[in-house]
Length: 156
Image (tube, rainbow, N blue to C red; front, side, top):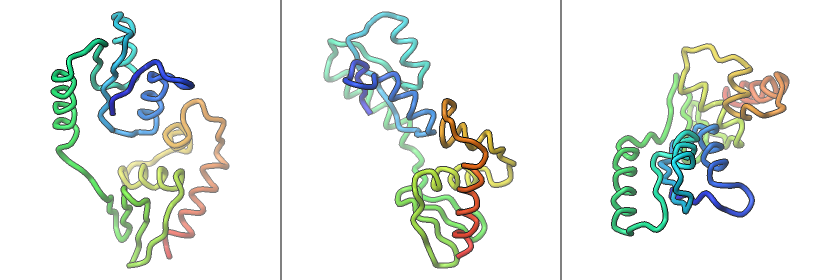
């Protein structure tokens, strides 16, 4: 993703920060007219993989994009498996014993987190921070409701 900082509405810093809060590992190159060191540091600190300033050389931009895609694109995981559960990362489908259901966004994010770390105890607070975000007003009951849904529907 090539991200400008000065956008209408949310700025590029906030967008990249939100991508990283949602554990999205897409390569991000920030491209901006903001060329001061503090701006570059902020961009990299919020989660950008690279930062270029305008004006720029198209050849350099293409070279940096190739580097980012080469670095990030080596392993593409399409599904997570644990026991008889299979979670498709591209379709948000959860499959068990040949039957499948489509998960909504938060259900998918919870299941993905739990299946990535199947033998690690995950607290409600960790789920809230990872799925809803650090600044969320979600509470333990929200987690319990989603977990209850997943338990009922993942046994098919």
